[in-house]
Length: 396
Ligand SMILES: *[C@@H]1O[C@H](CO)[C@@H](O)[C@H](O)[C@H]1NC(C)=O
Ligand SMILES: *[C@@H]1O[C@H](CO)[C@@H](O)[C@H](O)[C@H]1NC(C)=O
Image (cartoon, rainbow, N blue to C red):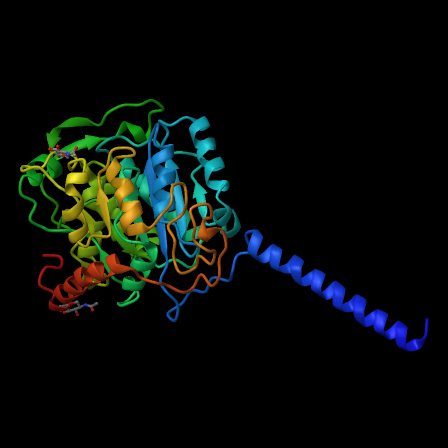
């Protein structure tokens, strides 16, 4: 072989191998999910992120999984809790189902409580479980800005891009908590009776029991009460969990013997602490329909409620029966979510088709693309922020 031929041969093989490499590269980028997550940035220049606590009991595995997919975003963190009534088998199946979602496996941002709590209906063990969840989420992830509680019977009415986009329009110290000091019938029926929650010390299922004595209303602090469904800021929860001021701890001990204390615990702390009382926005951002007078739980929502529910501009709604057809309508019309797929957002980089999930590939996860339902939500929030500025219904 002459020198020129040798050179040509080298050039030819180099080109050939480059082409081959290119083909392989394109197959691996377009044909398979990216094996590594894209970088997540937190801080004031980036969209806020959320820590979700989703809980349920025996038989709620599938509902929790569906709800998780409907509120999923790689930037958030999720803690799932099947309480002690559910079997370990159900818990393991939930873990397996979560791990089977490629994006969740890559970002590793969903955890399942392995040592479940016992939760007594109407008892203080509800607060213990929520504080447990907050502590875990604070320890696991230093990036989230707000903590959101959801039960297995809840569902979102906006996408995560909508939520994060609208929440980037105000300070990250605001707390969304429905509250009032107008106790009404609750004074005699909730705060004067003394109850004990056996869920905190017995190993079997039982109900709260009432002491024969009643106690007077507290004088050292004022009681506030409202919806147990809250969206609380990281800074307020650090104040509650770390307890450098004794108020959160004193109230925890007081509310240990109060019926349905999860409707008053955070509400009373926030309104009795001078540093945080100005950070309360008086709404839980949920859509619910109550009887008059209210029963223990709101109505089950169905397709007849769809239009009003969507017009409310709420972020979440409750409560729904398992796989109620209205959830399919919400998936289809609002979330644009396919069956067994996560809710799409600007981070999904794949092509959308009936056979391919666009969220098995991802690009920059720090960008947002709010949709039409986000506009409605934005209006609701703008009105609430106006109320907040006027300080007309905070901690009153
Ligand atoms: C909260 O608002 C009240 C009434 O506007 C004001 O007097 C007080 O200084 C505020 N507290 C803080 C900590 O900003
Ligand atoms: C929806 O629920 C209401 C009661 O909450 C009921 O009257 C109505 O018939 C239900 N609609 C459907 C389509 O099931």
